[in-house]
Length: 359
Image (cartoon, rainbow, N blue to C red):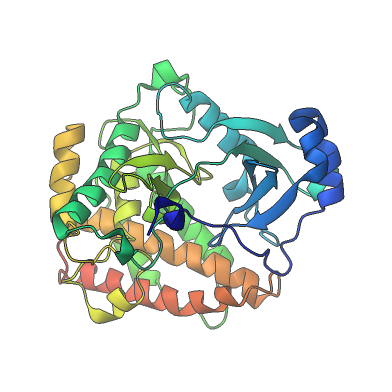
């Protein structure tokens, strides 16, 4: 199998998520030149939140990013904010995409969007691509490299990036807990799980701030990262910056660990995994934390809180997605399954609260 067979591919556009290509071609002609008139469009898989499309003309390709259809959580899909932080990271963090154009004219496709370069590479989704032929030790190194890039992001000099006044790092932990509790209340449906105990536990067990303000991605996971198809151990791109800000890096680590299923976890959690983090060779959460501490110099002394927060946050995001489906704002049948996902995540939170999961 050649490296070309490993490239993440765009495919057919999902029903209800089409773009007005006539308006888009006309708008992009001053940006792309005559190529804009022959643009063709496909859609990348995934995309429960902001959506990504592959625009192609001849041998050249670009990626268009826009908010989801039917979302009522506008602050979570601020294209201008995403564009601004990526612009700031240019030159200080080598994994961000190259930005080409930002549009805030709703007459084009009905919302803000931006255009960036297309990074050709391998994206790992729910199931590990076994045809890579990597040994368990290579898989371990690949996934440790994945976490090392997160540590690199947390080490970016805010002043050098011009982001020292971006976000509100003071009081970040409290605001995150309060904010996600409010988002839960706004997205509740009659058939949802009860998370009152988890929300109260997070309030009662909140640690002090880590004392460091960093650029944080806020949704750092395997399918938001691109690996080189020629050298699959190497990260070459980080995508989906819609929730990036400046805040406490330990909260960012917790968000990533919320996705991290390992072999010792209960079967109900492993069955619901969205990343193949329980494959042979993959590091466990304990090893990840130790490496993160070594790379960043930060102590992770309150793992149960950060892990529980990461799980609860995913529970809320899933409920927000299900809310859109429940109220008919989207026809995407994938969204129906997020109700069950919320129940699974709440179960894991309960195990942490009872002290049955400590790493």
